[in-house]
Amino acid sequence: MSNSLRSELLRFGPTARTGTIAMSALIALVTVFAFTGVDPSDGGGGPPGRGAPDAGTLLANADGVIGGLVFGSSMIGIIALALVALSVARDFELGTIRVLLVNQPKRLVFFAGKLAALAAVVVAAVTAAAVVAAVLGMSLSGTSDIDTTTWSASDTLATYANIAIGALLWGLFGATIAVIARSASAAITAGVAYFLVGENLLTLVWDDAGNWLPAGILDTFMSGGSSDVTYLTAVALLAAYAIVAAAALSVVFARRDITD
Image (cartoon, rainbow, N blue to C red):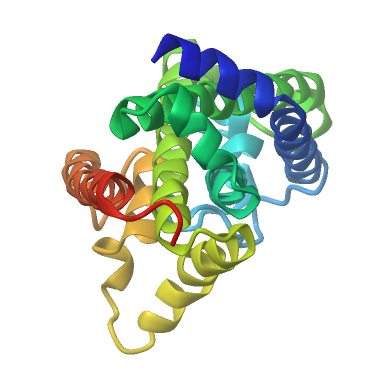
């Protein structure tokens, strides 16, 4: 698996750099907007897991120094899904999967190495975005009436860990869709359509959809829980979804003809 991991890191390098830059640029914009455009009296569009607080409330939380990362956590997840889906699906589109499996015929061993490499890339990208958010947060903390005395290193690290783990789960879902679709455009389109649009439409007929379905639970988990869904409940639901996704991915990749 180590050889597979190294080869994947080398092959995925250019795309990984692009993804890292995209995440960091997005979080930089969100952070600057949050700190310079903050008005505690106005309702904001914060993450669902925190009941959509205004920017002032969120930035005054113990993890407020990376408030921009929290605000952009859903888009961080979408970028992670797209990066992983692109890498997985391109192997099928270009036919390189056949060559790769000649070098490592044990399919699940090969794919475990690939996922490990992609996980490392996603964590590195989230870490870079977190550093950008923290540096800008500290630099801009004096530009608005935000109480920074509540900021805590331990809470900030906990939030960063939640967002990094959440991004990995977004990536796992992207890999599962890509193995089934075997097309980068189809996988990314399907993932974005469901996670950004599909679940929102379901809330029109099912009010509690966000408390049970993957995208809503991911937002809740990455935000540390909500008034409707506790953190531990979110962890349990996500673990169940991750097991189902990993099982589906493994069965399809191991049993389906590569040439299909």
